[in-house]
Image 1: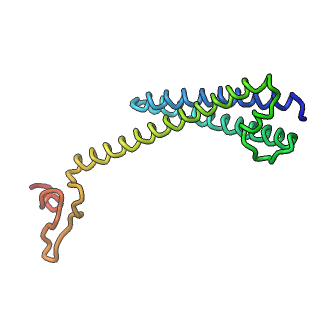
Image 2: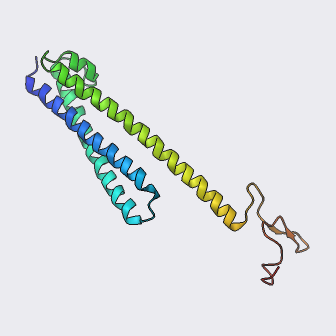
Image 3: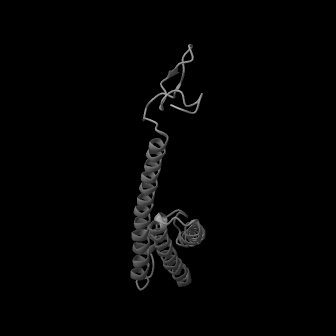
Length: 170
């Protein structure tokens, strides 16, 4: 039977990872809220914070995976055993705390997925709005072929009135 210390370390790693993921989701929400801000400094600051939290979450996940693999190996299980199996084999006194930490991480990960999807939809909406704005600004009709000239030098399929390329007047 592995020492209790491995179970304690894994539980601490799970709890630390949950804290980091909660910070990450709070930062993602703050970034989404500041998305409407026109100040680049606001977006740039939140971006560097988001990158830092993502790196930290990744590092904590690798520590948790290493501890879980070491614990599984000491229990005589495969190194890629599920966390549920490790919790089931933990000392009875440790099981509730480990289970709470694992459940908290799963719930936070779902919230991150939702926030990520909302952020992606917001970016898609913004891109569609900007494309429409640029088309309206330039007078481009959607799905219209680019303007040009036929072999007699007459304007053909132009989005704007002919003549303004030659004399500057209509």
